Length: 456
Length: 115
Image 1 (cartoon, each protein chain N blue to C red):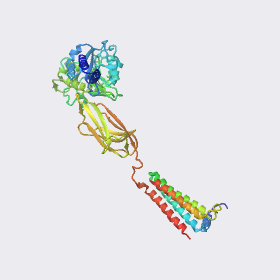
Image 2: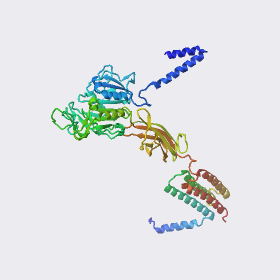
Image 3: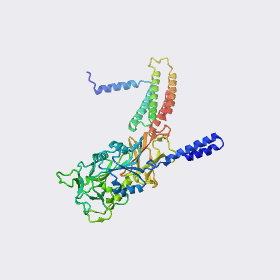
Image 4: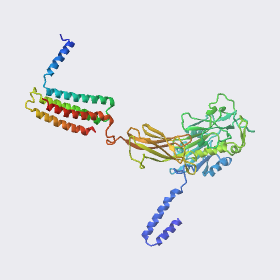
């Protein structure tokens, strides 16, 4: 404000009030136009989340999970800790979302604070924001129903935990084999990072399975075939409903709007205790000094918060072979070139994405041409093909869906016209008999007239 | 009595042939010309049935030139035939001149439409 008033004073002192008013309004406009660049929240140019709301059951979690939270803060996130039943809880104000991501570390909450409920959380995800849900043995129906909406079904039995008598973590204290050491990871460099996680991950909590009807949810960490979900302190009366590798310990879902959700049945997996402790799998004899929890959680949250595996495809261009302008219409049997640029967000900047399986379709109700794009390793993909011998309104379609990456779906419409009448070859080969017949008729008429006239 | 045998057909054919040989030569020349034009048209139609009607304008102009000139020749024959009472007062030179003029127009149109 002081800067603005100083500016106006100097401007008004100079000669001519009219000129001063002009300069004043120009400077105001300049200042206002710079304001958008001051915002650093989630935007198309910078897809990583920035402001995360963390809902806790009680604030002791802040200290028992401090390593996890400080690693998030060091990656540049603004964490906002609140109790889950805080009455002043609000995800959005005046239609704008206040946060870019939500972490629910409140498994036992029955009802959120006033402004938040199941529908509000689902709207949050539907608007493209990310979610981490951690449950444990005290998981409430609310948390379980949020998970069900995301395609993951927790075990109905409220007292069941994941038990594994073969791959449990060897420790001096707990003898009921509910602390398990899991190492059945999903094979994906995008989701779990390039470095292989050597040590198993410690897990103590409830089991869930992916709903068969949901095609978007993935099991990131599955239980071993010898695991089952049951109450550890009572005898089994009937075979457990969830057994073996169908039990998922950590699942993720990438929604069609590219929002990413992580659901796990163990809040302890994020705790300092599990991060720091060593782990030894009861089955194998190898003892690791540090469990794989910290690396696993760090890499997975990087994927969840769009620091990895977020693609964008820009700059779709096409033109006839030999020209540089984009025409408004193509003719059948033209040769054309197609370019698209695909970038991947590296957490800080857009890096060129390199892959050899991106394809472009020339589509009208069905793809007439399907070509694999070749890359120049710097993010530019291109290919050349001939327009098919069909006319109509076509689309260039780039559809790219790979495990762990955001789905790309671009299309650009272009009409294709048939030959104009003067674009055919001058004498059409198949029409030669007709040409011949016409000339033969003319010759015949000529000869006939002679014969008729001079016939005695 | 109403049974038709091959002998009857043969007798019919012979009587037709003898009647036809009595026509004047000029009319026979016209008939030959009409037959040639129709034959050419038939060849083109068979060709189109095999290959398809791709340059349809060329097909139409070819067939139309043959059929058109055949029709004009038939008109000439009608007007020139002395046994035809309707055109008794029409001089045959006038008929032939009409024939030539109409053919010229026909072939001009054909050349334009042939592509």
